[in-house]
Image 1 (cartoon, protein in one colour):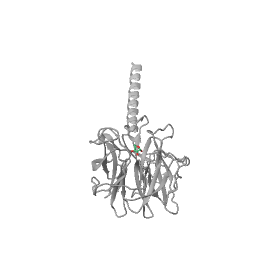
Image 2 (cartoon, helix red, strand yellow):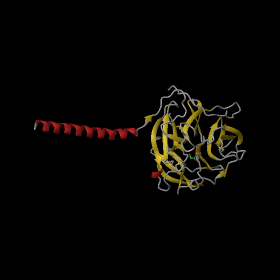
Image 3 (cartoon, rainbow, N blue to C red):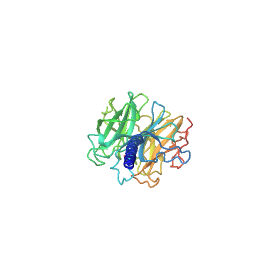
Image 4 (tube, helix red, strand yellow):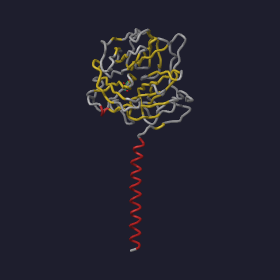
Length: 326
Ligand code: FUB
């Protein structure tokens, strides 16, 4: 009898412990999606994001003084681009340690589009809100994409879809949104033929008919990007076999073709920021640790200008950029 009571007691303690562990396991799963510091590396800092595959970095310095990077997400089992299912946000204050803020907009949250097909996003801060502008397929092909707009009150999202920009449809678009010093917002997009148009304040409509961009060459393929330096407008892009650019006096161009910016990166999809008085170039590689053109990783390099305003060519390095002392 004594032995039986003892066994029941042991069983009770065991069951309670099991339940407790189960509960903790559940809690652990919840905390695992919280932001995590992904690295404390000091040398060989490229790629900057290693725990998942990411591509198409859209980097920004927002008003909190941090660098924010919005990326598309390549799955580890990807054999195509159709499984790219959502955007990720990362932030940093030292360019080496990046906090992963998780999935900020998933294709399942977009009522008008297919599952997957969340290709290269661009981002903008406007009227105290953060927006992602992104190409997404309606029915599941690279030819039927629309340019979605999603909003959040905070940089880390989540972002809520608002619909798409009328008049910007077609092949994967690769949008880039750019705010000029006078507050006007321009959208660049296109595949093989780059286009630009002023956006209305609501970001959901074009304020004018799209204009073709003249850039002194015909090697444009995709991934338009616009940044300014010393009052000049730099239009850059992927030519299919690397990044190239031209310089102009207006956001519309024409741009004077200047040659390569990132010539050896077969698929150059980049963005450029100035952070703490240093210019940085964000891009992705396809060959890191079992990477492929569908399993990419984001890297960062310094960007320098020559005295005449041209850009010194950039080549991928393993070291990348050094950690800033905050
Ligand atoms: O990430 C999907 C596509 O690959 C992008 O839209 C292109 O720019 C290329 O990076």
